[in-house]
Image 1 (tube, rainbow, N blue to C red):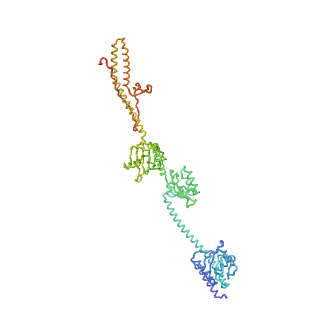
Image 2: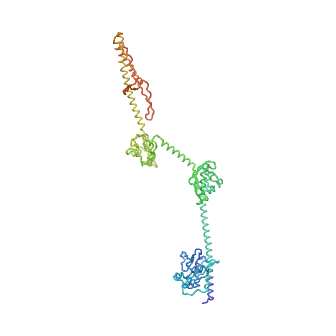
Image 3: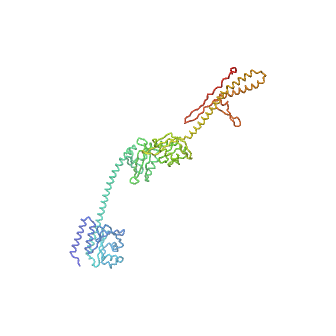
Length: 569
């Protein structure tokens, strides 16, 4: 069969159509498919595909195939070393023709796979552009037909060259489109970031806290209006100025450590440091910082003035410590417990009164252990009845050793959000007061006994005075009437002497101010009349926490005047 003029005209017409399609079409995949189908039809092969080589990876990608759906979307990759015909084409960079796959020695290792796939003949045209092997056009058909004619192969090589040009153009077009897409995305991203920056700039400018951008060395790059107001400097004064220059001298070591940490991406959180403002006033700020965009090249610092808050905190702390010391050192026991009996306050005086240690009582439901039976619940109910407070209540409470403690109790209910929250007890230990009262009562009783004895002595002195006066009077009269040598004069003188001694004792008995005893042998005690006539010293006692001076004086009856013997009847 000869190649005629009509065949040449058809070939030229086909090339013209393909060339026009390459110029006018914007779908490279469609152009390549049309080229492969036209080539297969001209050479009388029914299956065609175009492969692109990746020689570095030893793979070939099927970009179009006549026996593959257009919308499959799944790329097909072939391992080049499994296809001897592809290996031959890559080695020779020339057209590979296999007229009969059943006998061609090139396919000895894969013949079974090829024949099972229904391939009887194959032609491979290289796709070369400026000396570079891009891929190939792979044509296949069933066995039984004659091989392609030389003029058909020439047509195929011409079409393959055009196809290589189309692929190169498609690659350039794809790259241009990718660059355009990337440029468009970059533009959109830049516009988006610009909007974000604008929003950030607005937030930065109107933030209620001071905000500043620092470099890794701690130099000011930018600062918002609130930051300038807090520090008392203008932006021009602070730009490229180290942050250490606005920090007070006593905190220089702290800010130096903070700045060193910037290079290691270590940033402070709520760090309180003192600064000197533009007016040379010391203020306290709370400083926090973080890296810009997660990078260590810049630092954004936020700060706020906490001078007044710090001073208030110090005052509250001092007040709290003062109140704690006051509660701890007060002489009365102070106990506070929640309604559920959990003790939250137990001062030193309470420890002394009840014998419990505070560490054993605090934050434990043990308030009922201080009362007999249901005394705690009874106290709470009494507080509710009395409007939340009772004072001066005398109670018996329990000591840690199981004994009873007499106390004067004051109690109040505490409320939170109009709800009962806790009970506060003010406990005054009455043990010493009661012991002192008992001692005073005993002394009072003793004083009463002494007073009775003194009154008895005064009464006895008064009653004995008149008989003694009579005895002395009559004895003296009798002595004067007896002769000088009368034997009764001696006895009568002794009576007079004894009566005078008794009269002296009676007079001393009448002058008694107190009772002073002395030993009289064998353990006996008698009244020392001479000592008892001396003035008694005041006795000082303490009753109901009030110093009183008690002095007991007695008005005793004076001895009766001596009787005139002449007038004695």
